[in-house]
Image 1 (cartoon, rainbow over the protein chains, first blue to last red):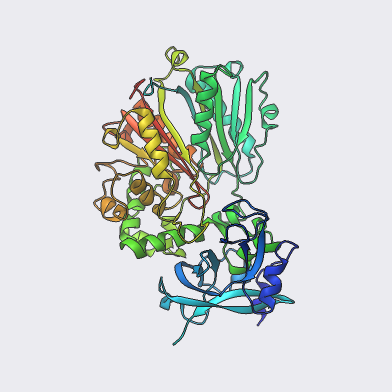
Image 2 (cartoon, one colour):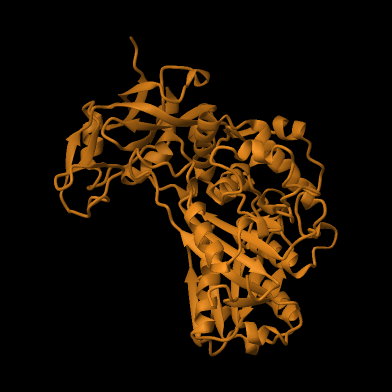
Length: 138
Length: 390
């Protein structure tokens, strides 16, 4: 309810626009280097692997595994006062990048390192959606 | 002569630490430098180099040299590799002295983030530090505030891979509190039991309050000069035998594991080789301890035990008073004071001089010092000794 609007909402800028535009459309958009073929995260102007200025936005699978997680109990921002304890997770995506996000759809005590996850997209403000992750079922 | 001393620490100044309100960083810095000059038996006019450790608020900028009233400095810089900076400052100071760029150099760190109206966490990593523009805004949107989360993620991964437990982290905090009780400079003096540790509130699970460092207002200053000049000064010189850095990077891709394989490995190997000694020669470790976990993983990467065995290694209390590897003997950042790597470095000077009083360790011939910055993204190592060679 009001929680979503009181949490901080990112303000997309020109370089990150494809990421946020993609999230708005339910697609996880990441940068991939046309020169070396490696993916990277977060956004950069140049490939951090080979320095080529040939990064292209491509749709990632959205599938990955839980690399590690933490449960945040301390309220560092008033927007999260009613959210604690909430999880912060690092997810190893199939594309070979490690991304930080939240895992939703299961209680924190059910989180298991190595579990399979998939991206979902949560509206967090006017015209802004965030990729989050949920367990792959079945 | 690779094992010869590269320089000597001849002065140490440590101000009162903690909840000391209403003073600026530069005021703490001035006090620490005055204390260090007095300690060394030097005058301000003897100083011809100033290296400042940038702090988070960036209120220790290059103009600090004018506020402090230095004149005719031959070397001035503000340096930052976050919590690892002190080691790098020592490298540059020793190299500058050996190259003749300067003779006697002050190294200083000062910070004053605490105010009566804000808790320690908010002081250091409150929302004022989290911009919302672009992808940087993702951190705030996901609730990833401060370093606590990053180290909690790292500790959780270590626990998963190696079975590290809350007891393993707790024994580090408990041991350091015992040391703090023996140090006149430490902020935290109350006894801490393992039960107290386990009952302290979660900050970012698996890290509890007592796994996290303090936040301090205060300053530490050191004076560094050549091995020759050090001979005639007031204090027993503490020689710099080895130094190295390693910035291991970050989660560039999923083949990298910076959370559990830190820069301490490479940095430590280089520093030990330079000093011409081995781990067995180290009588005491002064390790960067922003969190209990940092101590554990640093011991592993320095090779005191195998990767993954840090928990069982520390479990017998060997890091505490009376233990076989006395570590963070001033209470460290967990219970002493939080001055980035000037915390372990300052205590190393005390121990290497043999001036630790009730907390003096039996063997302080060679002291190992670590610095660590970011979320294990920066590392520095120093090996200090009263001896002039390894």
